[in-house]
Length: 352
Image 1 (tube, rainbow, N blue to C red):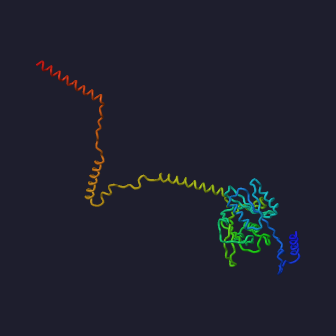
Image 2 (image 1 turned 135 degrees about the vertical axis):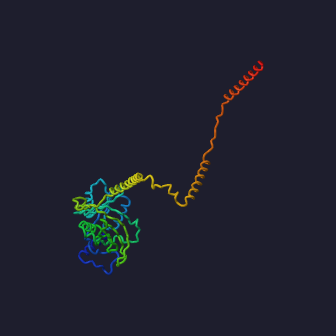
Image 3 (image 1 turned 90 degrees about the vertical axis):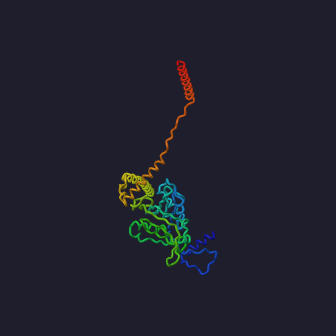
């Protein structure tokens, strides 16, 4: 109770008189607050269910960069986005950053001014977290950043609107209780290729020496709405292509390559001539001395004939073996013929 009373007394003193730190101060007394926290910006940072691990790490990095944020548990997908306005009112927040995942591949971010709008939807590309990069830059946790915007933000009206929205969300309020009262890093927002590129640098020297801290990501604007998470569309990106559509086009292009390759092969075979060049075999005869050519041709013919003779195999007559029964019959027939001849000779001798 005594501590609380002392804090209240010190607050009353700061309101009535100018707060100048005394030369000597007792160790038990708490330090008096300089100025009240006037710009009370609070940003609710949370996500819906279904984001990947890289997206979760990016969300945690953004929370560390923003001391004026307030966390919230994951939101169910079935809920309408208008519920986010009620959640912000319950948490006493006037700004909101909502991370929305699709197919555990794509990440969308909503930046919203809860009280009166507007609201912007972005597709997050080229995500590199602080843990991935491991840069040499470093800054104190809770220190206030300088916001650096590209000249292109002043060229078009929708870029100027996004510039004001980003300054209110990423700018740390002066005299915030969780912030440090000095600047030691810079957030750079540059417009390139119809996208907003985010970088975080540490200020090394007053001359302008910088060292990157991280994270890195690219915001591809999709739509800007008049109210918080709804209302009329103030601006729609005509160059935006959804990542699912882009992957579908890549698959079609890869399939078209195979079909083109087959068509080229068919056309090549159809147009291919049977003979590349009609050669006349008699042309070589008339080159050089004709007598020498004639002798060469004769020698070639002889060599060809010899090769043909060597290559042609000799005919081998294969006789079938006679069966044993036929051989016995032949032998018996021969014996019978011999007896008949002997009988004829005997008869002739008897007659004489």
